[in-house]
Image (cartoon, rainbow, N blue to C red; front, side):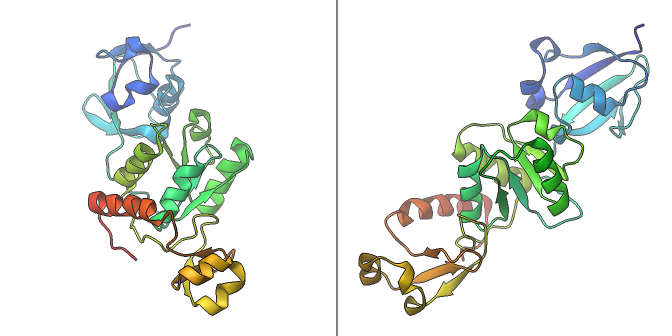
Length: 244
């Protein structure tokens, strides 16, 4: 038996997730009379992590709202910058976003990353346990109820991914303060204390070093530093912060 019919309008930012016929103005949707508005929106392809305010007949309602016949619903996009309450801003990235994880760490942002496919249930549980914002291009993962918070990564280009995360969450930037390999904090290190980690050419050519307090990896301003510095300077110029 058909349930109540409602009219749904999605913000342009959400058109990526819905079928073409639902992108042009209000679309009539038949509900079952018992499912929440959040469930209806997800069933149409939009992860709730990407839905902002829900406006029903001019008033804001929660995702738990049960739609009634004839209601007009506007699904807005998430407001930016997005505030994540209740925990320090930290991220967790799935196996497909390794380069983005390293870029975030380069900027001093706490970015956990699983370099093996541990499965959606384990990722969602880790997000909840450590209260990390789950970043993924997997819509199914972002629909899991266990995740602490989440965000869909819209682009497959690392440069655009980084800009999107920085714009959406406005994290504090403290470049050169985290290990890009393990996410641990970096500390200044004298040459003598790290010489066993260095090749002869490096010992001869460099004098300034940092070392990860978690994994002991040693860093210096080597051949790739200019490229990394350009990434850091662009992020600072566009999104603010202070270089470390």
